[in-house]
Each structure stands twice: as C-alpha cells, then as structure tokens.
Image (cartoon, rainbow, N blue to C red; front, side, top):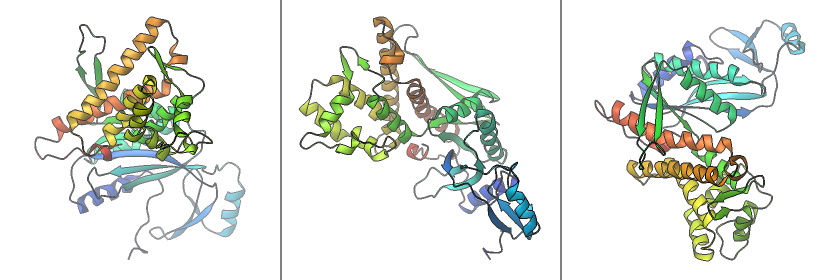
Length: 371
C-alpha cells in the first residue's frame, strides 16, 4: 500500500500542506508548532524517479524541479543540456510539534545552488509559512541558523508582515537607556516569533572569543583565547586539547564544554583573576541555556535574557565612552545580531503563549523545542 501511495512532493505545492494538515489531524494536535529551515550539502547528480500517481518517469536533481521524460533519448538530451543547473544543496523545511517524543515533520525539500541570495530564498520561506498559516496551522516561531543570509530572510519576513505587535520592557534606570523593544510580526493574523538556533549561537560566541582579530575588552579586564588554551592544558581541566588546538569551529560538543558550569567553576577556582573570561563565559553561556535548559522556570529564562541585554548595552556604552571601536573590542556584528534575536525570542515566545495559547486551551511552552 505504501509503495502504491503518492510519494513526497518534490516542490512546494498544495499537497505539501495537505499532508501536514493530515499528519496533525492524525496526531489530534491543533496547537502551536515551530517552523525551521536549513541547507544541506548535496552531491550534484541526476536521478530517475518513478511517479506512481502520474505513471511516468521524472528526472530530478536540477533546481528547475522534476522534469518529465518519455524515453532514454529525451533523458540523455536533458542531461547534456547546459541550461539545466544541478542543485548543490537542498533546502529543508521542517515542522516541530513542541512536545516531548514527537518527531519532526518534513514540509518540503527544495534543491538550490550556493549562489542564491535573500531575494531568491525569502520567497521559499514565505510560500511555506503562508501556506501553513492559510490552512490554520498555528506556526508560532521560525528558526534558522545565524548566517547573514538566513538572518536577512527573517528580517525580510518581519518587514513584509501585515502588522507588528510591539511591547517594551522599561529600563531599570531613568530614561530609556536600557529599554528593550520587542517586535512580533503578525502574519495572516498569526503572531510569529523569529528565533535563532541557540546551539549555532553558542558556537558563534566561542568563535568570537577565539578570534585573533578582536580583543574583547571588558572594563579593566579582557577575555583571551590564550587564557582558555592555558586552562585546557592544566591538570583536571574539563576541556580537551583539541578544543583549543586544531579545533573544529563547528563542534557543538566543544562549544558546550567551553560554556559548561564545570569549565566556569574550574576558572573561578584556579584563576579568579581572569574576570574577563569568567564574565564572558557566564553571560554568553547562559543565553543559549535559556533555550536548552529543561529545569528552569520561564521567569528565570526571562532574567537570563534581560541580563544579557543589559550586559551588551553596558558593554557598548563603556566602549563608546572609552573611545574604543566596536569593530575591534566588541563581539562581531553577526554575533551581536544573533544575541538580539535570542533575547527577543525568549520574551516573544513567553508573551505569545501567554496571550494566544493559554486562555482557551492551554499548551505548554517547551522552549527547547523552539530553537
């Protein structure tokens, strides 16, 4: 029966959304869901595909979509035609029911090239997001990694929204020095919070600390790669040598070890004068933990996010007052932008769940399934 059933659509079409609606009905779930997308490398190649519904062969692998072929000669002509561009990556869209024990649901997989920019990628995300919202699928968040292109796609989605729900966290000091403004786009009458991949953010913070192009000046102290390397080679260190030498900058486990409580405790006990490293690891290690920790309350998550916001604002104010250029003594522009997304994402998700999904039929906010 499964062999005769129609296969997964190879384009973003009505049937893609009908399958999602059917899956949610089978699970008897009508609450908020999290949408995410990411790119995966492909080996560019042609492949034949038999469509049981249309009873014909298709040639897949090009960014133009599946191509119907009638005979081997037609397939050979297509393969030798240079106007067809093979996909070097596939863009995957997944839907996650934010509950324990539920596997992600594939929405679409589109072959793309590495040369696509925001103008080509944003319509794909908009098509998927709007298609789900039009069928009353309650997408509450959109998540992606922290690359410049992906953040630009999120920014464009916010700018193109019909309206925005804006709320402010007042500054603890007089005036509006540290006031935090949260903007939640309203797309097709649904509030959608833009969040970042917290694990990818943690690797970005690690890479900023290890970058030799910047000196992270924190008052009278600074955060150094040299200090972390020294700690990694000490007896009883929770870090491995490969965490600091010949390192893999995309290693999630290495980033988790660096920002772990064990590493922070080790530095405090062995090197209490390394205040710059201690403060940096504490603030930027807690922010991803506001998403990943499964034991703290939402109030504690909000405190973590606000602490990071106030710290970044005070850090920038200090550099401006001291006459230090942010391009040399502050985290990178990309890392600062990711930090803002993480901070606003925590508060946005709490507000949306409180106002939208906690009145009629309450749904739990398991925030670690949102990022």
